[in-house]
Every structure is written in C-alpha cells, then in structure tokens.
Length: 314
Image 1 (cartoon, rainbow, N blue to C red):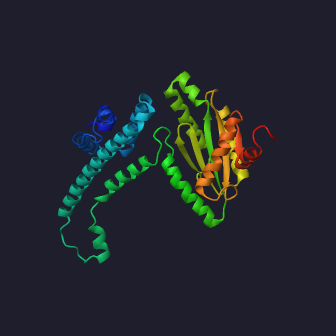
Image 2 (spheres, rainbow, N blue to C red):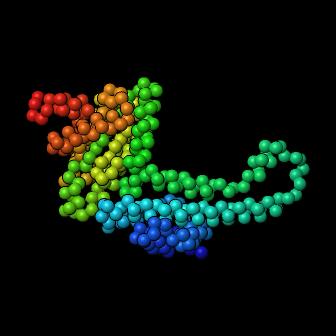
Image 3 (tube, rainbow, N blue to C red):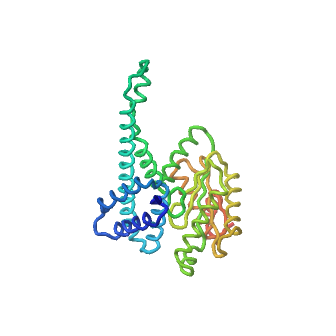
C-alpha cells in the first residue's frame, strides 16, 4: 500500500485545515477534523518532521499573504492546529503500541523457569506508552523555539538563552560576546522584488551565519531583518574578527548585490553587567554601523565614544 506521506493527500488535507484555522472566526481549530487527520498520520506512519515541513511552508505562505497586524492571531491559530493534530497523532500511535504490547503479553503468560528480580519485573512491566507522546512533546517544543522562515532559533528562545549564558559566564568568569546584525536594504529589496524574494534572502543569511559560527554559538532571528549570535567564551577581539568575516560573506557570497550587513558587538562583562544591558549596548553599536552607511562593523566601545563626542566630532 502506498504510504500516505508519499502522496499529496496529507499535504492537501493539512493545508485545507490550516487555511480554515487561520481565517476562521473561532480561535480554536476544527477539533474533529484535526483528530481525524492526526489518526491518519499515525496509521500511515507519517513522520513528525514531514508534518513540520508542511506546516512551515504553510506559515511562510500565510506571512507572505497577510498584513503584519494579522500575523500574530493567524500564527496563534496555526500553532493550535499543529498542536491538536500532533496530539491526536501521538494518541493514535500510543494506542497502537499499547495494543501490540498487550497482545505480546498474552503470548508470554508462560511462567518463567526462574523468578525475575524486582528490578527486571518493574522494567518489563513498563508499556511503551510514553515514546510517541514524548516524540510529540519534543516536536512541539522544537517548533516553539524555532523561527519558521529560517529554521534557526527565534527571539523568544534567544532571550532565554542569553540570560542563561550571561549567568554561566558570570559564574565561570569567562567572557561572553553578543553580535547583532541588521540586513541593510531589505525593505527596498522587498518593494522591488517582492516579499517572497526577501524571505529567501533572509533564509540565505541564516544559512550563512550557521556556516560561519561554532557549534557552541547560538544563532537566532530576532524579527524582521535582525539576527543575533551569542558567543560563549569569546573576547571582543575574537567577536570583531567573526563579525568582519560575516560582513564580507554577506557582501560577497551569493546574496543579492543590494543587500549588505550592519553589525554591532559587545562583550560581557567589559561592556555590560547584565543580559539586558548587553543587548542595549550591542544595539547601539549596530545602530551606529547603520548610520555610518551600512556594510560596517562597530563595537560597543566605538558607539560609546561616538555618543560621548557627538556626531561630527573626533
């Protein structure tokens, strides 16, 4: 039998539910339809990642088609639909595995030749109920922290991670740098080429950032054309070298000519004493880079000197 996920039925059904969810008068999705689709996903062995890809594509189309002031409610409705479908998928998978476990238990009622230890009895008595529910929970947790357009972390998770990383840096006495980047010229690019082309450019920027950072670094999209990178155990000098490498990569490696990058960097505890202050001083450095014409890297120290001296003064 052809797998459900190999046909267009799953994508089509999910997109129908998605369209009804984001445009409906009720904030709750059609629970009966979501439950039916969730059970179909389980019966046809559709992976959670397949659902994620279809959902992300639908979200991108929704964002491209709606005004900015409509996004929040639409994406909330879409998230509720996804949660509902994945919940019922997990329930159906759990019930199927429960049935298999119970049937296998009926075949294994013959007494053991030796009594099993209490630890073994406890381990064998645990049915495989939790695995699909844990998979669904992990999937929803991953969706909650991921930017749907670029696949990197979102602004909400960035704030949580930065607070934790600053705390860790304070306890260890190691430096922590923050890099903020704005894509220069994106608004004009969207006006000329359309938002979809602009979204593709943002996705390219995200891939470029991931390709130029360490595995220990934390890359996020903070909204619009703004990206952030948390750099644990990284000095200002090291962060400056990374920022310059990223600036050159954006300018030279495959992005449209109209787009460049303005980057600001700051380091804890040299430039700031808390996570909020670190964000503020890094933003000031990024703003200065933009005021200087873009395609520039500025440090918090340069921004502080510029602020103290005033524009046009040495």
